[in-house]
Amino acid sequence: MIDSLTCGGAEKSLVSLLPLLDYDKVDVTLMLVGRGGIFECYVPKQVKIINYTTGCVTVTQKLWLRICRLAFSALLRLNKFRKHPLNPPTMEWMTCSSAIQPYKDHYDVAIAYQQGFPCWYILEKVNADKKYAWINVDITKTKFRLEYCKKFYDRYDGVIAVSDTLYKILLNVKLVNKKRLHCVYDILNEDLIRKQAIEKFGGEIPNKSVITLTTVARLIASNKGQDMCLEAAKILKDKGYKFQWFFVGDGPSRQELKASAISLGIENEARFVGMQPNPYPYIKAADIYVQSSRFEGFGLTITEAKILGRAIVCTNFPTAFNQLEDGKNGIIVEMTAESIASGIEKLLKDESLRQQLMNATTKEVNTTAMTESKKVMDIIMA
Image (cartoon, rainbow, N blue to C red; front, side):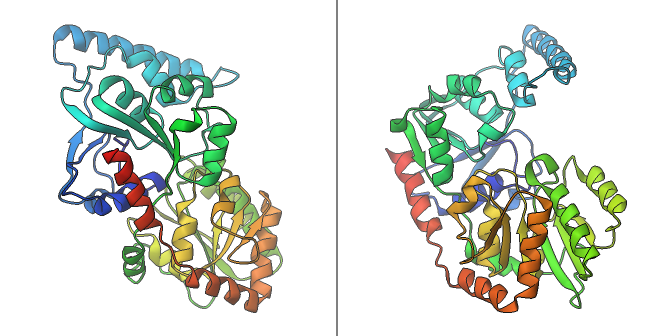
C-alpha cells in the first residue's frame, strides 16, 4: 500500500521495484489511496491495482464515519494554534480509524510502502500473516510524533529503512528494535532513465547558450529548500553569471516561490516547469544538478543525476553522504543559500573539476536494482 503514484521518491522506487519481483513466486496486489498518479503506467501488468475505501456500507457505519470526519475537520482547524502541530495523516487516523472497516481479504505478507496513513492502515485494518513497513524519509525532521509512530512500528514484523544513514537514525531514536530493522536501498531502473532522458522536453526547452541548472523535487520549500536556491540564484546573478535554473515539480510552495523569484529579480532565471512525468531530459540538460533538500530518507534524484553523469551540488543533509563523497563525485555544501551559490560558482569557474565529477558519476556501477530487489524477495519469502 502507498498513498498514490504521483511524482516522488517513494513512488519512483516502488514502480522500479515491482518489475523486478519474481512473479512465479508472488502474486501482488497494490492498494492506492489516490488514483491517477503519473507513475501508474509503469506498474507491471502482473500487479493487481485496487482502490482504498473506508469499507463503510451500512447506514450506521456511514453516519459514524461522517461524525469522525467532522472531528478531523475540526482538529485540522485547531492544529494551526498548537505549539507543536500534528501532521494531517496522524490526525486523520486518530479521529477516523474507528470508523474504517477491516479489509476483507487475507494476505501472506502486507507491506506499508510509506509512513503515515499506509502504515496505520496496514497494521490495524489488513489481515496478513506478516507485516512490514518501509520508511523512506527522515521522520525525525517531520511533524510525525515519534512516540505515536513507535506504538505502530513496534508491532510490525519488520521495518525497512532506505539508506544506511536513515537506518542509524532510526536506531538512535529507538523507533524499533534492531532485530526487526532492515536496510533496503531505494531502487531505480537505470536503463529506463537513460532511455527517457533522450525523449522530448515536457515543458520549456533549455537555452543551450547559457548555463543550465536543474533541481527536481516537490515544491515544498520547508523540506526541499527551493527558497535557498532562489537566494543562491540572486547571488549568482549579482556576480554577473548568465544562467537558467529549471525547477521541475509542483507543490504547495509554488506560488510562494514564484512570488519570491519576482521579488528577488530573478524571474527570468528561475524557470518553473511544473510536474513532469519524465523529468530526465531536464536533468540530462543540466550543466550542474542542484539538490537543496533540508532532509531526505535517501535522495533518489541524486542517484538519477549520477546515472545521467551530471556534476552535482548537494546540501549536507545526513543521508547525502550515502551517495556522495565531497570532491570525488559531487560537491557537498552547507545548508545555506550562500554555500549553494559558492558550490555552483566553484564548478562554473573550474571546468576541469566539473568534468572530473561528471566522469566519476558516469563510471560508477550501480548494482542496487539487483541486490535490493533480492533483499525484498527474501523478506517476502521468509
